Image (tube, rainbow, N blue to C red; front, side, top):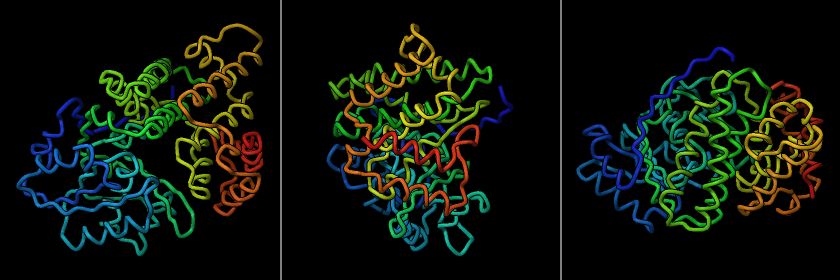
Length: 388
């Protein structure tokens, strides 16, 4: 196991009716910017619960944060923060709302000339401070409720970039599984596969003798495989919703990734598919991961075999046969929850290959992946494998 430093200060309030805790968790006298998306929280009762808990607080509302939050939209939120002297941000929504709110929190105190540098120059310009954030999660998927990660899209240039900072980790997050009851089928499906592939990015690399992390990761994968279909079949199954919600949080709160190599190539390539074609984030991941598993099967042999045996109970056949069966099981799982795995399924053809490769070349990115050996030529082959 490699050396690591683990830090996660996020307070989690989990269970039915926990939104009422806002009155105690938000600092007294805070001027709050309440952020949310398209307004579903007003249809499912979450908005009313939040506002009841915030009675007596000054609340300014900022709605309209998109799936794959747009930089252009978020900068309007930054302007509101400054105009109303906001000192606390409360994000009520799924991962996009939470990610967008993290950017607002950092951009509002950014001392550079252009807050886009938080994302475009993340390796050079680090976030040193941000406004405090709390969250009420309405869609399990990204783990954003318990980490310092954020992904933002600049619509003008069709770029989708990420940043991370401990300064944007929420002070608290409220997770009430009952919010899952009213979610559309596609959002639940995307959430299941998003969480699943978050685990795979930290797990499907190469062994470093970290059995605790491996078995934690495998337990999250198996829970998503078992509980995800239950949520899709019966949205009012509270226990299944609770297990799904907690699995999505555990998938990316830092715990399973400490002391082990991490990949993230699936996400980096997938982000470009969203940026160019607007494909849902979870869908792009299901397109890319099987291609990476096929192309990098030799580099990932030991962990693919371990994953196949421990998660899918694949123990018979030659090494190649077991790898093939493991990849097939993974694809079948994605498709069983309603997510297609080929570019053609989303109306995207071979023209995307050069566009994605050119994007990596222009950013000076020569290779990605846990070994730093997945080149732009490899990226082209991965997308070619997943065309149809």
